[in-house]
Every structure is written in C-alpha cells, then in structure tokens.
Image (cartoon, rainbow, N blue to C red; front, side, top):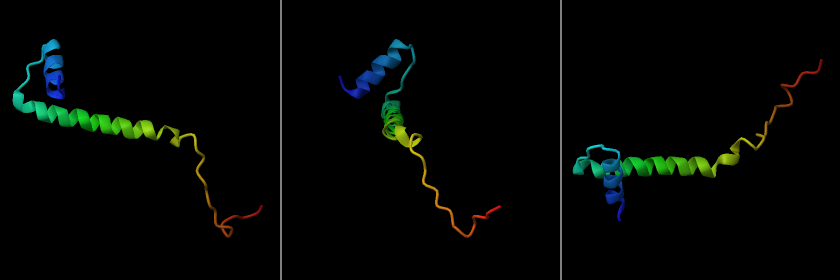
Length: 63
C-alpha cells in the first residue's frame, strides 16, 4: 500500500470525504509536519545546555 492509499483508507475510516485532487496536498502537509517534528526531536537537548555569556570587563562595576 502506498502513502496515497493509506491516506484514502484513513479518511474513509473516519467518514471524511476526499477529493482525489487533494491527496497530493495532504501528502505535502503530512510530510511538512513530519519534518518539523524531526527537527524538534533532534534538538531536544538545547534546554539542557547552559549558554555561554561573555561580558565586557569594562561593563562590570564593583560596589
């Protein structure tokens, strides 16, 4: 079963009418969502890293 048949079958099971001309558009939307999820999954550890902060020594003032 190719991806177009997969889309048709799932839309049919959910009782959603589908126009054959819409299948390529639905494929593109699903692929875009997949790419966005993949990008997020590969960058999970961004929150775990502490950013390096460089401060100009002239800006530091001593009390």
